[in-house]
Image (cartoon, rainbow, N blue to C red):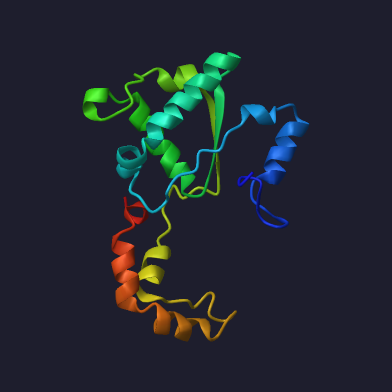
Length: 168
């Protein structure tokens, strides 16, 4: 449910899910694999077993339907998928999923990346560190002062340093 609507009528994936259903995809054969974006990619596996779960989910879909899967990602999910595709093919002794070089060819039909961050998001780092809001401050002129009052530069820096996913 959380994948279709965020709050009220603000849709996230519902339109895509509806359109896929219109062209013959079965909603029961779709799954959402959300992740903690604050973590560096290796920590997703270490803490949550995220990539192992993703590997097993893809293999189960492939085995139960006889079809290869289509992976769809959004934003930072694009780089998560690229990391996963490297991880799943790597040997277990090297910290990978042990799927071998042909795993992707056997299990994945295609990969659709929607608004992916494949070249990074360079504006986010200085904005997080400095609180610079020149693009959004015009919308809410008091926002900059409120941000500094309640969430100062030092606090933002300390928090940013805990989010390995920003630079991982």
